[in-house]
Length: 359
Ligand code: FAD
Image (cartoon, rainbow, N blue to C red; front, side):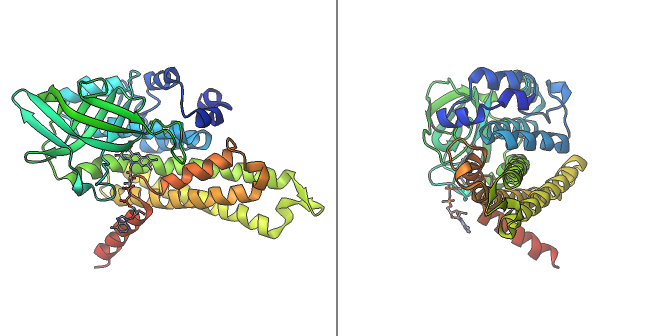
């Protein structure tokens, strides 16, 4: 259904920086933006593997739409992990019923280092008050609900803020490098008063643990999305290399061009295997899935960034127009090396894992 729905609109969405809201709400109401949510909460109860393949399919078509899926899925996962039973019953079905959600950790002074978060969530009688400023929140420009991470008196927490609450100001980022229709926005929260049960009542934890919980889902989703980017780029590059002739032979017969295709296939297969492995661990509930998700995200994001650049090289002028699949992929994939733990942060985490397991 995504193939028909997206059709040739991805380039237009990218150029205008908008996916029509009714398109997003329609997908949301079918549970397709967060397909791992259990049936009890109105979801499709997909396994991580099945949701991953869906995410890769969308990633090959439109990384902006896939980014919206990542945010919606991460919001649903955060609620399922950090909210009490009553809060889950009240909130999760809203995300499978057509409402849209974004997850906000990052701040001007807290990018890679989320221990520097300054947003405050303060209890005040039967209310909580939220003060802070978030940056670069994907899907926030479309969102009905914002899952906002911040400091509490006794640690860290997450609060669910209606986008229309008094004191919330959402400012769309108009000129992102890529994923231009993913609804990135900065958010100001000035004395936002909410009922106390807006604070997710999973016990307070350290910022690091809270963030790891939410980011693990995001990493899986980005990893599968980047695998989709690689699949889309490989198809486009192979078709072009088969069809176009220069110097009297097909491009594919020039060995230096063929090498680009081989490298794209290697990257796509490597990303696919890393994602499948991480999803298997996720579906088994293995604690090893945290590291496997970091590995999959890193392999897929770096592979997609390099692979998309190779695909543009193979298509050359044919792929150099703004809306072309490989041109979009080139811009979109670069951003995937920055989010959900940049490449450097992933490498640091993987090095720590290697040191810890070396004995
Ligand atoms: P910095 O942390 O300033 O890092 C700059 C550079 O230094 C990077 O290369 C980084 O890897 C490197 N670096 C930093 N620390 C170290 C270290 N210890 N060792 C080695 N290298 C280091 N945030 C949200 O909360 N929600 C979202 O939905 C969201 N969506 C986003 C979508 C996009 C397209 C983008 C670009 C950002 C998004 N972000 C979101 C923010 C994103 O999470 C941050 O950009 C990211 O964590 C990096 O932070 P920073 O940009 O401040 O870079």
